[in-house]
Image (cartoon, rainbow, N blue to C red; front, side, top):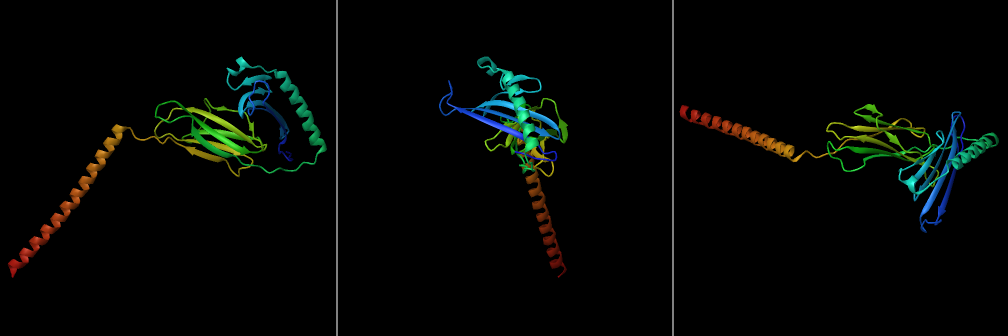
Amino acid sequence: MAGGGGIPLALLALLTLQGVGAVRVGDAIHQAEFQQRVEQQEDGEFQQAFNADEMFHVDLQKQETVWRLPEFGEFAGFKTQGALQNSIVGKDWLNFLAQHSNTSQSRFEPPEVTVFPKRQVELGDPNVLICYADKFWPSVITITWLRNGQEVTDGVFETIFYPREDNSFRKFSYLPFVPTRGHYYDCRVEHWGLPTALLKHWEPQVPLPASESTETLVCALGLAVGIVGIVAGTILIIKAMKMNSAREQRGVL
């Protein structure tokens, strides 16, 4: 995957180990690494996954291993230095490719975006909104949350980039929230494959409480009965006026 004129030049290595050690046959451990340069800035990633679920990644800036769940670190270990050495090798290889390869602009693949809650939504019950961006390339993307049109940053958490088998990427963004009637949310995604920022709208679809539903039904029935009464009364008045008019005409004759 290569590009020029500010386009990322990326090196992606994906190693899959199946049926190794205590891992059952059919299970797979994936190790994914990449280095990229975007507008003269370099960054990269190192992560391992078990059956496509992240176990850990290495924060190359802080030079530390970050377990997807803290409990994972109690049952396994990883030497961070190994990932850092791989990162250095990746940077050297990236520089070599940049100097000795003919680069051309690769096709941008825009993300497919979905927004959904972590669990069933109930008013007043804390929940988490998930924005899932999938099948995009390159791994340069901005995900922003909006509540009622205003940007929200408190509590927002993003995963690292997860590589797919076709070398595209996927990524999750999480927003803790308390469902409130009248509030709505948008996940705004910006990517080079999109002509403009993509807004994915979401708002709670919560049925009215039983008491409110009953009150609404009673009011609706009352309004319907009132309308029927007005129509019936109008018809009776018109008929009565016609009958009186007919009697007066017979009286004159």
